[in-house]
Image 1 (tube, rainbow, N blue to C red):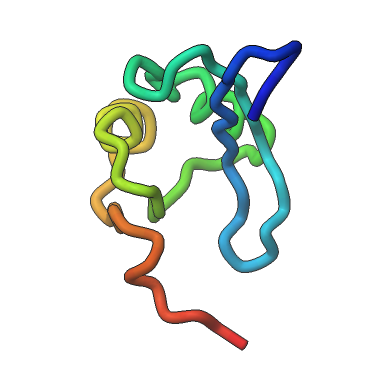
Image 2 (image 1 turned 60 degrees about the horizontal axis):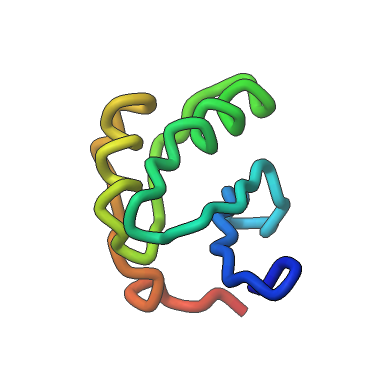
Length: 85
């Protein structure tokens, strides 16, 4: 997305079943974003830790997920999830 003419990256955490938006961050770059603060804020707001992490495969999600949530179930590609209608 563009903010005042500069390209920015939006990172967000949602609940996969409801698509309820929990937490978000805007970053200058995609490849240096750690997502640690995003995960901590989501945990605080929800009052529990996530059991499964579904991402677009960005390596920083996996690192932060392991560090903060001790994630064992990490689905690395969104397109591998069967749509539910």
